[in-house]
Every structure is written in structure tokens, then in C-alpha cells.
Length: 87
Image (tube, rainbow, N blue to C red; front, top):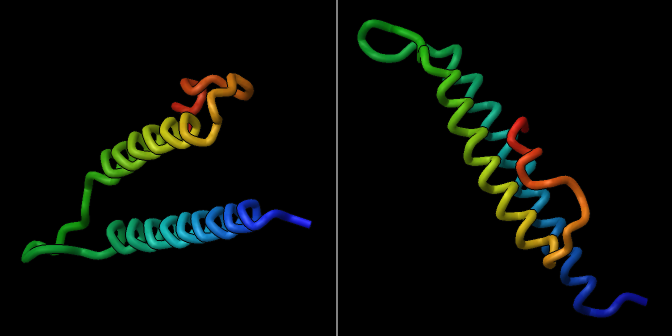
């Protein structure tokens, strides 16, 4: 039988994963809307999607690094942190 702490940790993990999936869906819908809708009086499309994607990837790299440091409990197993740059 699981201890109360282990069950609570699973609930927090499920909440975190659910929030991340929701965030990813929101980002994909936002990118789709941003890339297809025309803005301003000239009705131009947003032309800097590559930079927006780069900014998102940098934030994800930093977030991944922080999560690895927090959740690894000081263990050195697994891939080195710099191998996540290509994500």
C-alpha cells in the first residue's frame, strides 16, 4: 500500500503534466491564430514566427535545466543537461 506522501506526489505530478499539456495546446492554437490572422490597418500577417519559436525554445531549455536540477536529487545519472539544447 502506498504511503500518503507518495500518493500526494503522484497527484501533484498529474496536475503538473495536465497543466503542461494544456499550455502546449494553448501555445499551438495561439501560434496557428497568429500565423493565419491578419493584423493592423494594412492587414499584414505576423512575419517573425521564427524568432517567436526561438524565444519559446530558449525558455523551454531554461525550464528543462531547472527541472532536471530540481527533480534529479543531485544524482548524475541520465543525459548531460547541455544535450537538451536541441529540443
